[in-house]
Length: 270
View 1 (cartoon, rainbow, N blue to C red):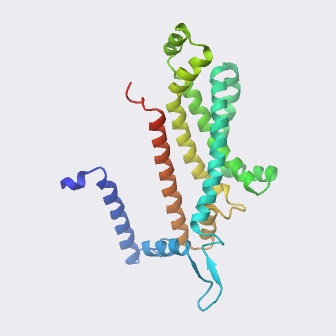
View 2 (cartoon, rainbow, N blue to C red):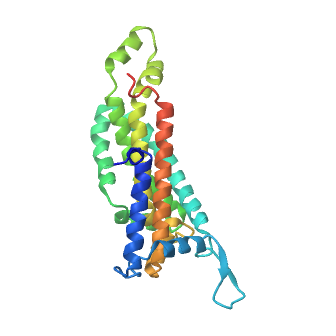
View 3 (cartoon, rainbow, N blue to C red):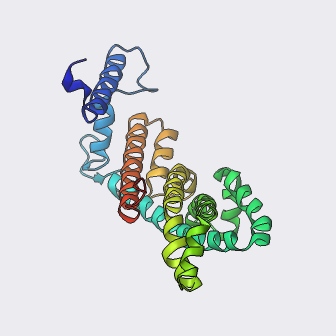
């Protein structure tokens, strides 16, 4: 292998180029029906069309913009807002509940099985119940995303606190630190890497739940657009939505990793 191909930054690019080349070759040779797998150009055209204005039909004077009356980026922004609200609630409540369960053993034994039960449930299993309780508005969607994010954050917080070296806590207390200070300066920093890993997992769960959350009255929303375009056999737009969802998820993951390195710079250096 040439030296330039051994670069860790170049290899992912080469992999992407090869994937697109194989995809283009298979579709250009008509090895796969375009209804099932359109070519890269068709997907790109669908992406551009979803972010621009055009005549409603050939020769028509009526102009339509985007898809389902919204540009694709607007669908993405609305979904990000829903995920952001659900995640913020999940972090606030999940970390608090995790700290309480880690400190109170009998409460942990009672409550933790229910949290594991919620974590194991597929979102489509209880979305109907949430619709009955909260209707088909954004409240249901946010609740669903919250329930997807909440369990992994609780479990990560409990594991993080249980994994704290008690010798450090006792040392701080013996040196005159109060229990609140020992918690703030010893327990919380020690548990923070685990909490951040839980938040990272929770964001992934929230993204995988966004399509289910937006199945009912989800427009505008990138998950709802992906679902509707699939039901209308608009495969290029469906794949474009999938790419947008995947790229947005990767960017969020990189953002969380960056924040994790920023707030826990001591990890790996002890």
